[in-house]
Image 1 (cartoon, helix red, strand yellow):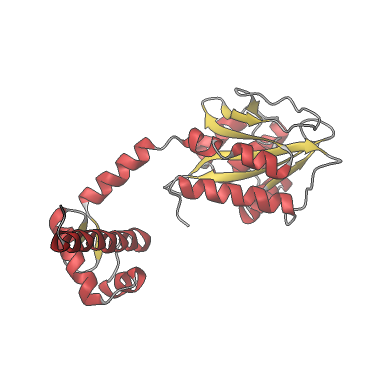
Image 2 (tube, rainbow, N blue to C red):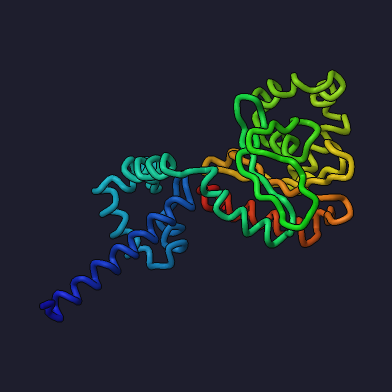
Length: 261
């Protein structure tokens, strides 16, 4: 039978773990190096208290202190934990589990595409019920510069990786991609600024699409989520309810994958 003393000790242990976790999360938020004052403020505690926990974390390898500046960083053990967590993330599965909700909330077919050896590749599809079926199937390749999905990848992919796939496009589009003053480059920059790509009947007449990027823990684009529908039912406004729902979905999916806020 647990005594009151044992219960008190157990509560203190739990509280200490919770406080330590807050300090660790503050280290992650404020990286790559943070002062004691900023860490204490971020964790919501007095500097002296934060200092005690930091010293314990340094001893366990969860934190480290720079000799010259005195600032604190994540330690080697924390980095190992982070890398292990990244290795366990199922990017497609994490995004796909919420895809039915996006389909139901928007009443439009939606799909997730990732960047593969053949470019933007559809991996999950949720077709809307009761609307004209748009035939997008897992395994389908989306053109880089002629689809909302592809243009979203083009806006955030490293140029070298993007340009390899651009070689499949027409000579005119390839030339525009390397001309900073071209309409295509202006469109890609607009996608970066707004976080959305909207295409009207570009691939299939009468079919519109809206896409948003999903980012990983290193702020790299890992997937694109796209909504498609007929032009008489599709709200194309970048500030409209459809755009807000898509942006919220992409932001939430990115957060689950560890993307910085």
